[in-house]
Image 1 (cartoon, each protein chain N blue to C red):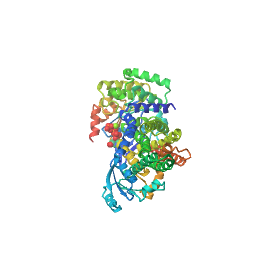
Image 2 (image 1 turned 60 degrees about the vertical axis):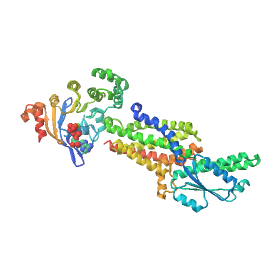
Image 3 (image 1 turned 180 degrees about the horizontal axis):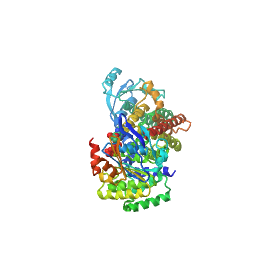
Image 4 (image 1 turned 45 degrees about the vertical axis):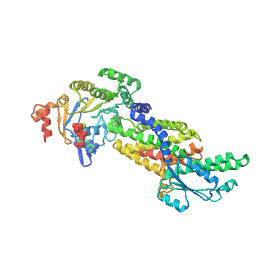
Length: 234
Length: 371
Ligand SMILES: Nc1ncnc2c1ncn2[C@@H]1O[C@H](COP(=O)(O)OP(=O)(O)OP(=O)(O)O)[C@@H](O)[C@H]1O
Ligand SMILES: [Mg+2]
């Protein structure tokens, strides 16, 4: 990621951001509302075209090899965006098929991941009718169906209860341990502590990057919350 | 291929589970076929009519009586002069004046050519158009009665006269005016409106974003949307044809498969239009507005409900760009007149070109908007 920028008209939503993420790392994006986290993530997923700058994702160039990138990444949007009028299984079948997972393998993967999530009872329910926490878990599982190298999670736990959040992070750890890179945005300070490295964004700019401990000692405070309020207040 | 099939399955599942869309698909054809005739009926129930009788014979008396006994006409008496008729028309008191020439009865009996002048108040063109059909139908009925009352030898002559009137009448029959129109509207709405709304809704919900991060190819996405709506549109059209038979007793005179083929071409153009509209609009309201704006322009230009005679030249020329107008020609020709491939060749070529152009524009615009 180098000097990536996105402008909407005159407004610079993401301002020359530069950083690197290691394979299998859990990388957190922190920032206030409107800091540009979602915009940055959408550029990396190929949903928005960068105004300038270059990026290499999963070894492919963002500008010229977006097809290959798309095959290698999973994305979970900030706004829940699976089909509410399709059932849990139908959604997974749809996305698995689009990603080119073979029918037999797909069936096994869907069964396993539903079992893993403890979601078998919801398998044939319409997604619109299941509780939010389950929806989020489903969206995560669906983003992993094609075994991507990187998953982008945009505020995956906003609005869900603490127990589900805990479970969700267990799942993130489990996934990362299989070598999948996790790119996650969050508003929760405790979640920032779970990340291996975090990046603090404000007004489209990268303010700091490092492990949570590193950042705390650099600034001389004892919690990420204090770090955060320091930057956001400016 | 598996991807396409999966997308089609997804679309059908969603249509089936969407109560609003489901009811549009089921109710739209029913409402149109059952309601339109009534509104048309209403238009022609209070036709104000007056007469100028230069003949004053028993035949003219009988014809006038025929009009007055019809529930569609309100009689305004026998007028003395043309001036008086003009005056009344100017004040919108009457819609039609029927003028019987001198020797009307004599000529009729001698099987000579005879005529009567019908003057219509064309301010309300719908009333004038449909009313004319009714004015003529009454005369035709009378001729029919007359023919059956005559001795067999004379009968033949009189029948020719009557069937001539009938033939003209058929062109003006409101059923034949309205029914092809309903079919065209049905197909157009399913094609452009339902497709545009469907895609814009996915934009609003954000579900299209989830599709766009996948390595799905553009043509897959587009074909995956078009095939289901093409099938739905064809189903609606077939339902329309069945209702046309049940409600109006009209059957397709020409080849049904030719009709279906051309409908598919027209639908492809309309689907493309829906696609195009969806990629230039941000929300369902905008899409709805654009569809209806275009729809009204198309309908007005086509002369479907308003006569094109009064239109300026440029407007008539503009019709060469109006897919609805070509499709209307096809329906009229094949359904009503039993037109063959030869008869609608020009329309097929025009519609095919339009389908290709519109669909190309749709694909390009989708490419733009997905960035
Ligand atoms: N399509 C767009 N057109 C114009 N401005 C936009 C567009 N999308 C986002 N923005 C603006 O860019 C800025 C960054 O938005 P972004 O969604 O990336 O923030 P965020 O960090 O994800 O915030 P949140 O925590 O609320 O999700 C905001 O000020 C937003 O209003
Ligand atoms: Mg965001």
